[in-house]
Image 1 (cartoon, rainbow, N blue to C red):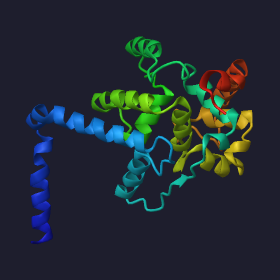
Image 2 (image 1 turned 120 degrees about the vertical axis):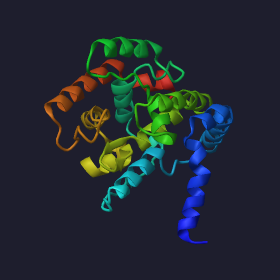
Image 3 (image 1 turned 180 degrees about the vertical axis):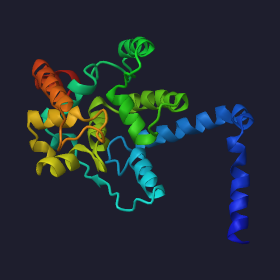
Image 4 (image 1 turned 90 degrees about the horizontal axis):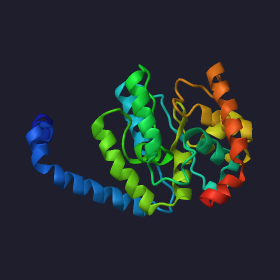
Length: 252
């Protein structure tokens, strides 16, 4: 059998997946299998380091398709006790101050975002640290309702089977801090030439300040907007205090 014939057979086999009628008939089976796969994933990686995330794979494939063979991924897994409490507190202060209390979703923030988006041309998000972790780890980036729909059960399963410490640990290890720079350890060594364990409050706040879009906002060339957010994050960190971690999340 020639390569052309093999390709035709594969495309013929996959063709039903692009038909709405197939999804209407099989969506329950697909949803059930997807849930089982995600459940197995969260159980397997409840304690062991995560080797890579879905978003890392997405980025690598995207660059290869653009014939960009120079793109490389910097990624070094470290446990939570090897990450400065300043960094742990910085992302909570910047991204999700209700992280210790919710079960994956901040419904008050979601409601406010809906009202804001109805009146403004700009879009405001309301994703929690848990939602961002689920998206980066096993899903993909995008604004489609389909992806958002998958994000809900994925986040819920993660909150059930993982502790808050584990969610924060994975989040800090897979978050993107620059082009191809994933995880706070790789970011700390790239930008500050030190381990993530030794990050100062100012350095941690700067890293957290670029998280909304680390490709546009630069750690090594911070704009006035990034510096303003860094200052705001530091103020929030001082308000929360380092004891916030132990008292609310039982972190080391």
